[in-house]
Length: 279
Image 1 (cartoon, rainbow, N blue to C red):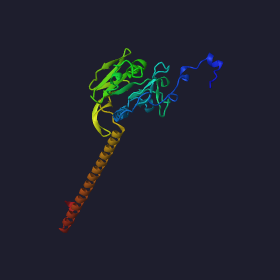
Image 2 (cartoon, helix red, strand yellow):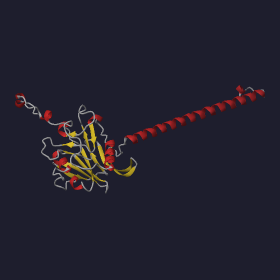
Image 3 (cartoon, helix red, strand yellow):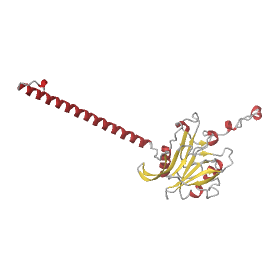
Image 4 (cartoon, rainbow, N blue to C red):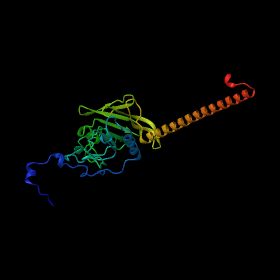
């Protein structure tokens, strides 16, 4: 069945923003790839999202995602129109744009490209993710090419759980240039946050993790850590209040004891015929 096109539509075509597909029109499942990310990918991406809290942006202006279709090719020139980053973050989104769950992230529909993308390297993807392979196995552009040439994402980070090596790249003159970490941190000025390696226990696993920190170098707490900090502060406040109550009770008892001693002394003086008020 064909849809009739009016003469008016032919003479005055709609702008691309009104005719291009949105996230509701495009598949949200993984395309052409077998298997699912392992547990490390899931946990590491979760830690990145939980600690990505750029100051100066409302919660609705920030979006983070992992293993989500990132659509980059509106004209369909690429065999694969999307990539699935292990993790990416966007800031400066219009507050009214898709306030609920996103099924995919469609760049031409959102009109805001990601600020940073992170790939968690594995032996099978390392060459592609680091721009050392000309094409992916399905003959589509590699993630490196898409991030650098198609989307021009300002920051690109790779992390290998096998070697604990972090590599960071900054887009300069339309090409990625590797940048050294300063004080163990990649500073992302647009987000006023730094990304570095943190050794600690997360979800019961002790290892090195990629994690966000503030300008002063403090690690941004996760919701669980903030809850624990609040619990510890409440416990400290409760302990302080109990100690203050005990101190006040001791002072009250000491005052009562002093008054009782004074009364006993006055009574003895009166028994001896001495007026205590004259002393």
